[in-house]
Image (cartoon, rainbow, N blue to C red; front, side, top):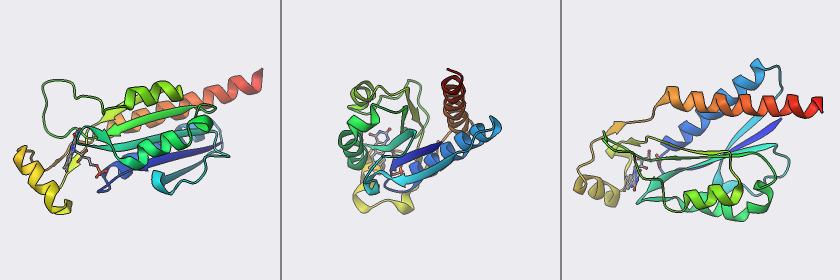
Amino acid sequence: MRILVAVATRHGATREIAESIATAAGAALTDAGMWSQIEVRDASLVSSVDGFDAVVFGSAVYMGRWLEPAAKFAEAFEEELRRVPVWVFSSGPVGERDHPADEPAGAADVVLRLGARGHRLFGGRIDRHSLHFAERAMVAALRVADGDYRDWPSIRAWGREIGLSLAKAEVAGSAS
Ligand SMILES: Cc1cc2nc3c(=O)[nH]c(=O)nc-3n(C[C@H](O)[C@H](O)[C@H](O)COP(=O)(O)O)c2cc1C
């Protein structure tokens, strides 16, 4: 089974999430006795989704929105993505919050249009040293502190869930 994990990132934190999801999904498929090849690619570099049996795609969130390559990826391959199992994730919220973070604008609509199996929002990472000047000014104005809010156990568990769900579908498909 071939799986594509397409990711839109500006500073690399979301790519590391994509890689962790890919590893966990692959391990779950291996545990179920299934062969898998999982490719993590930048969404902006994907020219075709043909040949993949499932797709996971995700984006960092900036100013309440996905990065452009993620939105473009969903739009460009909408027809093909509707034919395979798709999972979507976003990563952004940083800092301690006492209320649930908002979903990025337009994400719910894309999830619906693609018939995606789910959308997960994971915490992100802020490291001032890697930000551009304007970004640094913005996080300073919003008083956001540096920190890594990515919840690795949840990320790995979600990747594993995806692998297990694909393994179950494969078994059910070959039995019918
Ligand atoms: C200028 C700026 C704006 C941001 N805006 C949001 C936002 O609106 N919502 C959110 O959840 N996270 C926001 N974030 C946090 C990022 O999504 C987070 O740092 C993420 O991990 C970045 O991922 P990347 O390294 O893959 O680009 C913002 C970060 C910066 C630097």
